[in-house]
Length: 485
Image 1: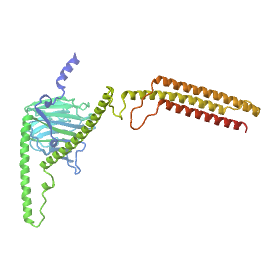
Image 2: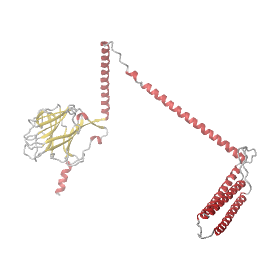
Image 3: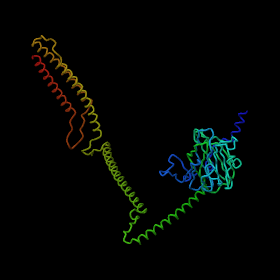
Image 4: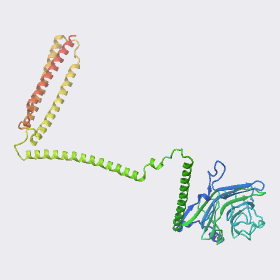
């Protein structure tokens, strides 16, 4: 029961920060870079920070940094990332974030002046009144007449506060200071998590009566107990309505135009005065004549585009002409072939009938098959001849007469095999002639006559017989001469 009561007590103080622009689409959140600074590239080579001035004192350890530009927006939010580190369990004195009507100077209130007019958010780490309510984050709005009460840590002067230990955290802490619709809300990230949106509610001040415009700043001070106060980021954002932004843009554009016209007139006047004082000086060249005008550039682009279109159309016309020529040639050939199929006797002498062409093609395929079979037979003959050439004599003591007799017997056997092979070739040729039926007619041509199939096969057969006889005679002579050596 006690645990439940503790959780219920903590729930109102724990909340996730929600940006107003996320819930209101009419709002535009704008980053103000002239009111911000952020590491790591923070300082220029000359040691200055852009748009900010800073300083401090070693006599009384204090330091401060103030923005040189004015914050004029009605609604804004500050995101400050900082770190407070110290060796002791108790720190001193603290630091403050300011929004005042005038830039602050060195003073006793956490390093800045007292009697300020505006907002001060104090991170007080030293318990001056011994009430054990430090470290504390307090909000105090001053109208320029109140003097800060150090002895009591401003207990009776602050408008809101929350007790949070912000010293010696593993991660930097973050303050989210939101001023929206005349309500000041303060959130804190305790530096224990890497979640950038893990903010806890700290305090809320209704109608704090802040100045319409002011300067932003940060200051810190230490005493006998010294702490290190580091400001890592100071980011400023403003909220503006879309309609107001459009009006502001128009006013800003009008202002820029007036400044440009004034500058242009001053430049022309200076040029005229220079020409009067230096009449012998060469006349300056007209820069407009060196560059093409907007009209000339558009006209040139139009001409280039038309030239490219004309080139593309010429290529398309040429390709279309080629396609039409091919189509006409194919149509003429198809008409001639179809006329020949229908039985017209008036066929040109240089074009054969389709049936005869098909018949010739089929005959050529049959002849090709026959030639392939003859090639296999010749390969077998060559293998047998090689075998006979490489076979050694069976009896080394045989007489020459026996050797001649055996050689003649083997020659007779080889001749008989050759005769059988020739007969087989002749039979295959006769079968091929019978399958063809009638002799294929050659296409009519003025250039001459074609070679007949029977004559072609006869010539091939004679050549094969002559080749076989020549190889047989040559092998026989080589074998007889080798035996008598």
